[in-house]
Length: 376
Image (tube, rainbow, N blue to C red):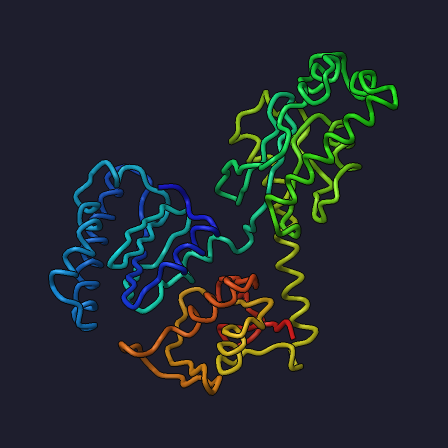
């Protein structure tokens, strides 16, 4: 199964039910060590069975729920092709697993919601971005993260420059086979009429990108010949178009290479964004715009008030949230009636388009394992 995306996380949250099983374990990428994952998963499934029984799930239902996972235990080929971690999510009606580049601690948790905090660590410093390939014959839009690239549909948008522009010189330039440098590019669009054709075509493409992306705060990286990128930038109204692009004809470059080059461009953007979040917190940490108390954070998350939520990896805080009184009852350990409050807060922050960062505890500028900045 593919690496997990933010859309996958949203789908998992939406399919969570009264009995939701979340299992995490570290895995090895090959060799004899890869078989250690079989033993880890088998032990975690036994632990899961015990938890399900404590939650009064019938034996027949437990067997049905866990059967797909037990089949993975016995699949030798499956264990030979792993990443750094394996995440499994199970309800009575669904079974999903993801191989991810995160070294998880072993966790088995049964609750009324999937436990997503370990998965969200994959997205810290690894925000979502888009890559637009300005290919001569087929404009393509990709949805990406550091580890994933997936083509997404551009609805009601012209894809072919050669068909739209109806002249061969520009097509050759897009391929990079006509002359060299900017003079070759500009030679084919030297008349105002041709310049306007290119400009209008890219306006149509840009409109399609905006309609497809929805959230224009997500970075967009262009891939294409330098002067073609310049024309697109003039035509574009996209609010977070990266100044730097992947130069050259994308038709001549493998998809994985395009992805790697695009990530190199946006990586510093995401690192800077997180540093700015911390700096902003430090500036206003003694005001009512922030908190490091779960009594404030969980209600704020439920009500969609959190802009930035920072959690220490591996830390858990159990308790109950009362939506009628908008209060929290913090408890020392888990039981069948309470929830993991940081996961609860992460879910509601994530689903209301807040930012969730899962980091090592030493990277949080406070003696608490969680901090939040509020929208209002």
